[in-house]
Image 1 (tube, helix red, strand yellow):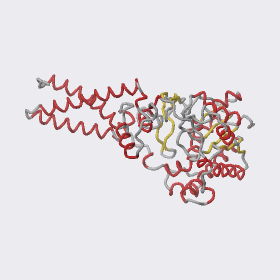
Image 2: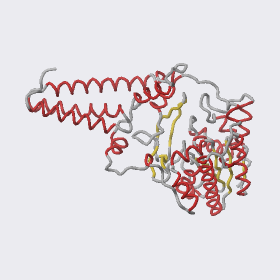
Image 3: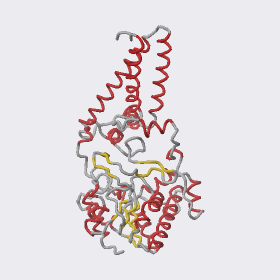
Image 4: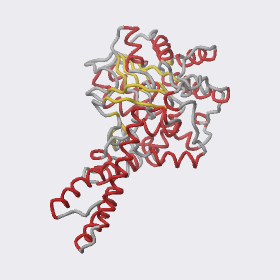
Length: 415
């Protein structure tokens, strides 16, 4: 490369270096790209000092390396769009997922509820070999916005419809079968404590006549993952208190450089953080090809006997963390029941049907509160064990047929 001649050439070089650095920093990390952006700017400052002292070679080398890196990034990004099946397993999940709060992700952060679905987001989603379209309305939930919903659905990814299209989710199938408008307030990776807050913010105004609450085994883990023990105990002790999520889920101020870059400035590249995913997969021993990668059809999923008969100590006072999370979950359901009573709405609990011990605990909680329990999840489990495709392959979420079966079972509930 020939040395730059005069200020115009220098300004041209600087003007093209900054967008090239932006591309590279965006590719290196979704959440920490600002660090790489700052490092690139410091390197540029050092190169400019050297240039002013009559040594332009450092600036030229820096520009050339950044240009080469940016071209490589754009080439890799093109490959990931044109041939997504080149990646597989956890690495493909990282590359193609939208389950994050950075630019291009489906979440925004809230101090109490943690990740919340952002309104008006439309993008393609991926997980474990399954592609689907994610569309949230202006109110921030999946599916069409309704001025009033006769039925509101609360829960995690099973209700949200992980892996299936908008019109294939449980709430959408319920509306199709019953003719009753329903709102899908399900959200991936949430506990019933977070569902309570989502219902308060987005469900009460819909004035439902029936509220379906779906419990999932991971609710226990999600509770302790998002909140520390002190906040959970305060939720149990103080009526009306809404706990604060852990620091990693707290929204950052607008001026925070890490948040500003990750949320507003970073390019939503598929290749972002792929290098980190490779390293984690190599460290965890999960770095392997899976029958042709993200474009291949994975294997059939049926819950194992071990999963079906797994113990559950939460309701029995076993593991302290599990016990605390179960008490929090039970209290969240009680508060949802109180809100339903204020609306004159009927509350219905359901679950996956397994682990059987947790399913029995959910049914017992419904009996204790005097609300209805639906065995819809158990029915779908029985049909899956009999050979029907009720769960997404290599994943475990309900298929469109599974969602339709759940909705059909819930049709019997009259508001």
